[in-house]
Amino acid sequence: MARSKSINQDDLRNHNLSVVLSALMQSTAPLGRAQLAKSTGLTKATMSLLSEILLKNDVVEQIQPLREAQNGRPSTPLAFRSGRWAGLGMQINTDGYGYIAVDLAGDVIDERWVPRMMGDVDPDEIFDSLDALLKPVEADLVERGYRIVGTGLALPGLITADQHLLNAPNLGWSNMRLDQFPVVDRLGAIADNEANLAAIAQIPGYATKRSDHLGALGPSDSFLYISTDVGVGSAFVRAGNVVRGDHGFGGELGHVSVEMNGPKCRCGRNGCLEMYAGRRELVKTAGLAQGDAAARSEYVDELYDRWRGGDTKAVLAIDQALTAMASVAASAINILDVDTIVLGGFWSGFQEDICTRLKMRITPQVLARYVLDIKVLACRNVEHPALYGAALTGLRRLVDHPVEYLEI
Image (spheres, helix red, strand yellow):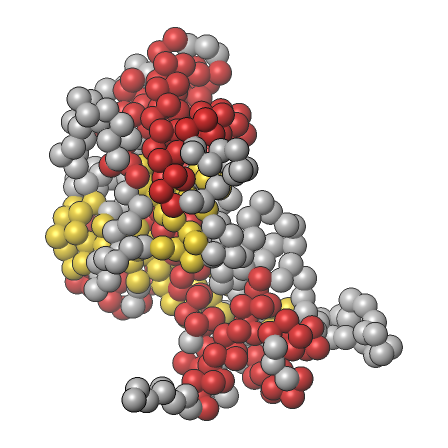
C-alpha cells in the first residue's frame, strides 16, 4: 500500500502564505483579513497569524479602511508595501540588452535599455556589459532597503531546464551554459525563452499587485501569446500558467512552415512564419532595407507610415504577413482549443486595426468558429514585455516559497 506524503508545519505555513499572497495579488482592491479568510478558505485565526507575519516582514501594510464591515466595525485592508521586496529582470534581444527592477506593488524601481544591433555578437562581451550595468543598481537597491528576491533572464532561444542555451539563431549563439557568465551565476538568474516571459507579463496578479483597472485578461485565463521581433515566437498560457511542453521547448510558432517551397529560414526549414512576419524579412519585402540592416528596429515606424500611406510594397508585405500569421494562429487555436490571441512585439504597435484585421482572417479558419468568440488583443507592456516578465519570475519566488525569505 502506498504511503501518503506527510506535510510538516513549515510546508503548511509556506502553502498558506503562498495562497494568501496570491489572493492579494489577484484582487483588484486591497482585502481585509475577513475577506482574505473567506476567499482562501482559511480560518480567521490562521489568517490573523499569517497577516502578522506579512506585516512584520514589510510585505504588506495596513491602509485606511475603505468601508465599514457588516457588524459595524471598520475592516482594515492589507496592501502590498513598496520599498522592500524587488525582482530583477535582464534581457538580451536582437535590438539590445537591459535590466529592470520591479517591486511587489508593480512599480518599476529602476530600468535601462541599451539599444544595439545584436547579430553574431560575442556573448562574453554582452554579459559583461550587463554585469557592469547591474552592479551599481544592486548596491543602490540594498542601500535603499530593498531585498532582491530573484532574477529572471529573457533570451530569444531554446533553453533547457538546467539552464543550457541550445540555440538562439538571431543572436548567432548556440550550445552554451548560461551559469558560466558571472552576472548569471552571482544573481542566480533563471533564464527562459523571451516569449514565455512576455506572456507572463500579460497575466494579471502573477507576482505583483493587480492593476486597479480590469483588463481583457483575468489571472486564470488561457491565451496564446505571439511574440514578434526579428524572429516570431509564442507561448501558450493555460489557466494562468505557461505550458512549456515536456522539455521546455514549446511555442516555436515562428518555425511553422506556411509555404513548403518558401524562402530558407535560419533554422534550416523553408517558408517559416518568421520569413514573412519577422521584422527583418518584413522590412526587406517592403523594400526599406536589405541584408542585416533590415533587422534594425527603427525601420518599423517607417514601415507603418508607408503602410498607412498606401505604399504598394508595404501594403503587400503587411498583407502577406497577416495571411501567414492568421494561418498559423488558426492552426494553433484548432490544436490547443483556446480562443484568445495576444499579439506582442512590434506588431502590437500597429494599433487596434491590426488586431481587428488579424481576427477577421483567423476566424474563418477556426473549426469551432460558430461557438468560439475569437479575440485578438494587443500586448500590455509594449516596451520590452519579456524584460518585465523576467522581473516577475524573480518576484514569484517570494509567492511560491515565502518561508525561504520571511522571518516567521
